[in-house]
Length: 462
Ligand code: 4AD
Ligand code: MG
Image (cartoon, rainbow, N blue to C red; front, side, top):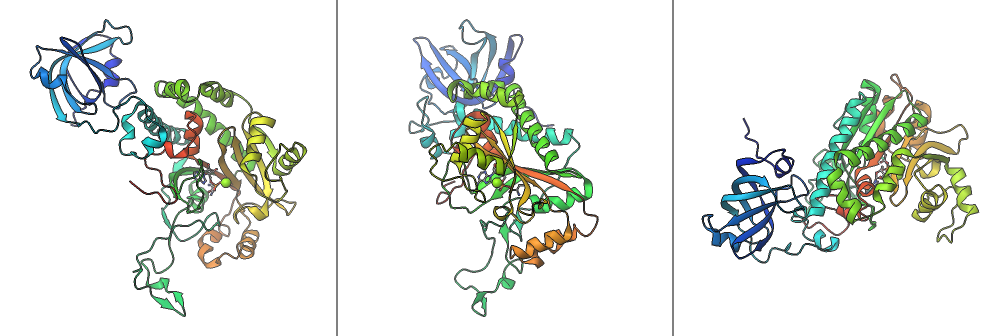
């Protein structure tokens, strides 16, 4: 059986002293006094480090006195009550072993580094308090997402990453190919994709939605949660080329059910972070954004407004807040408009629903007015669009018409259309950007700092 390593998190949680234990971790700091050395050891199990104290009785004590920050170390010792007032426990060192030394050019010598600098050493930034906390929260929240859906009887569907269709129709696709770029096969002056690996054009998925929908119409409420890819060439603090999306799809449901689900899920996940991840969360609410906890508290218990797109445009037109872009019916909302609605007008989260059909993808259900579709975006203060979703067009004829009028290749969607011929049913779903959600709950303002290895245009270092 796998022998579990004793974590520092568990040790610091101990209710009594423990003799003859062993810890493994990395040295955060070392301080020498005349006859003692104090080491702060962190093993990534929690934000706190344990203080280890050694004296000259310890074998190879002189080696320990010059140990470098970042060294991997294994220590045997006793957990005893600490006389220091900042911690309950400390570790009296009986013996130690240097597992991996760390020379003086280790970049994390100081306590504080800028986020910009840490981005250039993404392979090491998890060793800082802030990024350790970030990636633990990321892990716990992934678990909470499964817990939320599994607890509500949803089935997890593994949708493919390689796909043949552009779900959002925005043309932001990365190609997947094994064609030899030095010798590209052509027919009639065009690339001959029949020679390619799949015998046709293939891409990285921009969304798992189209693939998850047939399972919604098969096993009921489902969700997918995985990486998605967009080649959109925008260098903003809220966009990445690779990000994770949570996408539930609910059967026999309409747009209101969809908004209800999104609201419940967001509240659940916020409550989870504030309780389950309280220590790591505290780092962000103390040091990154002092208003974070209060703001999240309001979202957790406050009202989520619901306003139609048409109404939103009216509000924006009436209150022209020196906008750079005029709010015009039929155009997408700019982030300055989103900010106005969430931060000034409603002062909280707001669903904007029933959008002009011209600016939305083919799969959204057409409303009776013939001009709008049953779509919704959830906008959040400071974050902007967190969720995008819709009720799906379940009527075969309308969907087929829309595929045609959007000049999509009908043959590529034969299987999707078929689900509307064989026992079609109203259904709805949404996508929640996982990194956007992490920005919301940590107050971190750049999306590159909430994912282990950010991918953005012109940067792929790691
Ligand atoms: O609004 P989007 O494009 O919706 C869809 O892809 C639907 N197919 C989802 C569905 O109905 N199942 O994307 C959903 C969310 C956005 O609201 C945003 O939070 C996030 O995904 N997102 C991004 N996050 C980071 N970087 C990007 N480039 C993103 N693009 C979208
Ligand atoms: Mg969207």
